[in-house]
Amino acid sequence: MTNGITVVIASYNYGHLIAQCIESVLAQTIKPTRILVVDDGSSDNTVEIANKYGLEVIQRKNNLGVIENYNDVLFNHIKTKKVMFLGGDDYLNPQYLEKMNLDYDIVSCDITLVGPYAHKVRKGMRTEFKDGYWIWRFQPTNILRKNYIHGSSVFNAELAKRVGGYEAMRNRKMKKEEDWKCWRKMIGAGGTHFHVPVNLLFYRQHAFNNNR
Image (cartoon, rainbow, N blue to C red):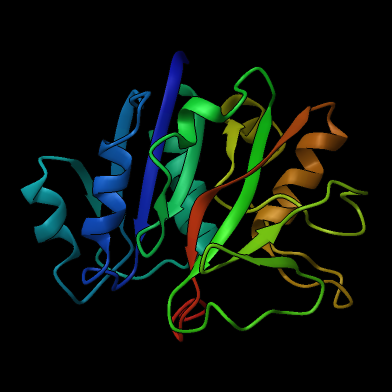
């Protein structure tokens, strides 16, 4: 395990959006140690576009889905101390990595909602409309009751591996968010969390967010 951070760009048929995602990572004011594009069985031009940028690519023959895909990457392909998973349909503020406090095991931030369904506010979301965008504000609370840490947070890869990585929620009363279970286990094992109250992640709300 070496110091530094790996940004994993995960794509499933997001070839039409991934260029913006890649360029936002390349434009970071503090560069990641490694950028890894993972094509989870896409039927589009995801790999072709990633290759144009000269990036390292994992191309899967079949779609594994979020949990199996992320766990394979986490346990078998991450050698840096920190890692973050970024959806190929999302993108970052250029200062994303610069403003994240990497002294903590999990570092999250607020989100700017973009895309055709950006105006659709889901139950439990704390939002405000500012400068033409809907901003999703997160309020740290009890991680056992509510997931206040988004899926593209930066986290300690070694600790995540130690607690078993991603896992589906088994309690039917809770929304099945694979990252939530991971955060719960990490914090339960003594992991620390820090929230940056700045909207540094652009999260695209569209018809394919849950297309798995």
